[in-house]
Image (cartoon, rainbow, N blue to C red; front, side, top):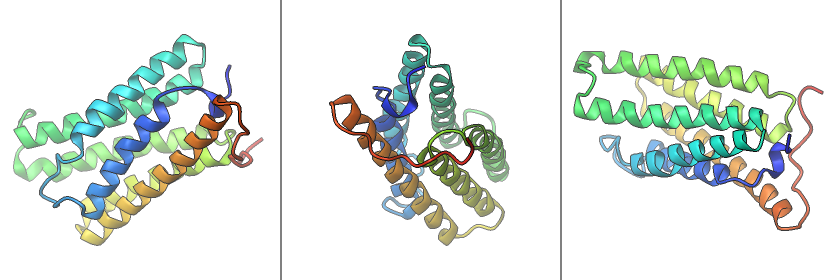
Length: 192
């Protein structure tokens, strides 16, 4: 299997652009009422890009990488469908059930991403930190569905921007290796 840190792929940039768009929306660059603002990027660049990367990784035999990309492609696609569906009333969810629907989405994905975080403790530390920060962002957004707070939403947005920044660092490391340079140190794994 090709090491995760040197896999030439569109995945890091696809993941990062969607994360930056969502993070900026959560910190208030767009009004809270414009929930669909980041969807063009999330759907067209992030979900599609990660799906392509998952297929690519599977084709070259990097099944763990394909699984990770596939999980995140599923997350971003389901997020876009959820927001589109709620905005346009596609699922017959009443206004009173929107918050519970958001809770269901966040709990389901928090369980999966925590599972992913634990399953990847043997990867270099930077990957574990990205996954752990995703867990934190999802948890903050979940808490926000129980106790609405613009402060929690903004904090979650800053956490999203933080994991996007680490994603940029990982991309720079991969790009450096792919162009004949040295890898940036991703840190030692939590578990060996």
